[in-house]
Image 1 (cartoon, helix red, strand yellow):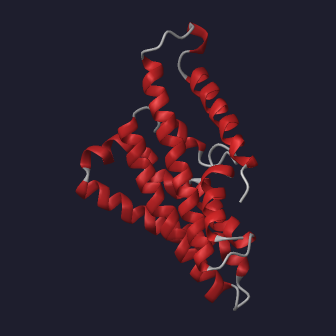
Image 2: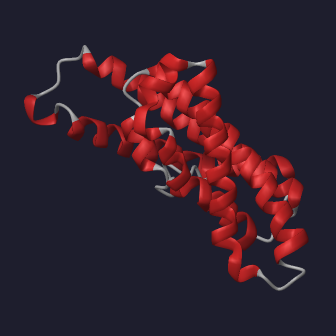
Length: 191
């Protein structure tokens, strides 16, 4: 599989939020405003990309050769937690308003199943370091696209005439479902 195919597939065809339903908590919780969605998307891009690179290095050059693959999940979570802690400290110091607006969702990146899922799927697919990193970039960009699109739609929905029964969470879930259906259309693209 080519690097471009891995990137395209991770971002659009197998979008972790809309096709595999991983990372739904920040997707629904932080997508109320585009500005906060962009901030969360940027943080997730950094964490997933760097964690994909580091976890791939650790897996391919430490865990696998020493027959320690049973430690995958623990090692991957430790790497992800350290990266999220770094992002949290950076945002608190450099971007206090964004840090405040993300609230509890920023540290929850540590337990975001999409971040761990990318690392574990790279191992499952037996990707090397480059392919694993590209898969991470694609997955992170896919998350960014999904959360920013949802935030833009939600901002438009605030000023729309919506039936009372659909206001709030119901219209958000309907929108997410329609977005998931739309992203299924990328499944027919071939290279």
